Length: 331
Image (cartoon, rainbow, N blue to C red):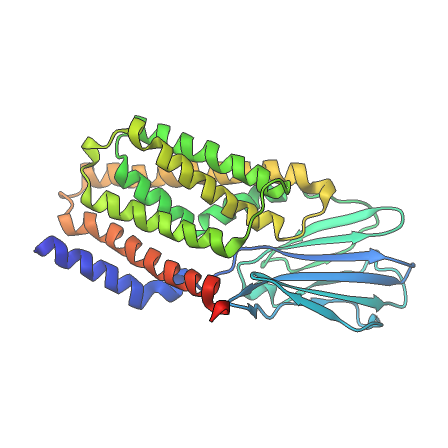
């Protein structure tokens, strides 16, 4: 009876109180592309992420002498809004500053790409550095994608909660290594296929299934005996969920409009960043558990159960929210 009360409390508390905190961030990167048609005229494509069809109030900022010379066309998809227009400036944009107004108030990055007739300039705009001076030579920040991968996992609460459930379900280190290996191989496959365009990725259906996978693992981990769970019997389930999560990772890159010549290095570094963050997160949790067992008093049973109940509550909220997004337009 006491255990049931703890589970209900954790489930309800996170659904009703903390769900705004875990759903208030947007991690998909934006994409700003400028293509020079003359020395002073540029075709602009601005793609910014949305949340429930609402924009994040991000606006490209150009030098004051630049003016709009065409009507702006906008296309809204499930997770992005894409604006296309033309600007004309009094001179070239080389050695001049452009950026994104409002980026500092978000957790979103923006890929910037400026194509001149003689070279290409590209960089990654971040909340702490939302503006840049366009230099007169190509700059392809491939190493930036490594950090984007790390950030995507560390700030992607759904993927972290999946790992937490996995650690509850497979507490022995050797079995956890096997489970994480299966998960890693699986999500690497669909990440590569999705970004290269060989596997269709639609973010809302994928995110709905991801939420379902988290709830399933939380439920199984709550009501199963970890000592009786065989990794040989459950690896295929973990592998299957890894395929789904990899498709979710792919949407972070494929929907952002990355230029094709950056695609392969960006893909490899993004995936490496995810793996680094995944290993670091598991190491941190294991270290915390080890220290608590050896340096603190025995952990109360309710402390052990609360994270799983909370995870189930969060997953149910995500599942309902994403299901409404998925089927809402039909009604």
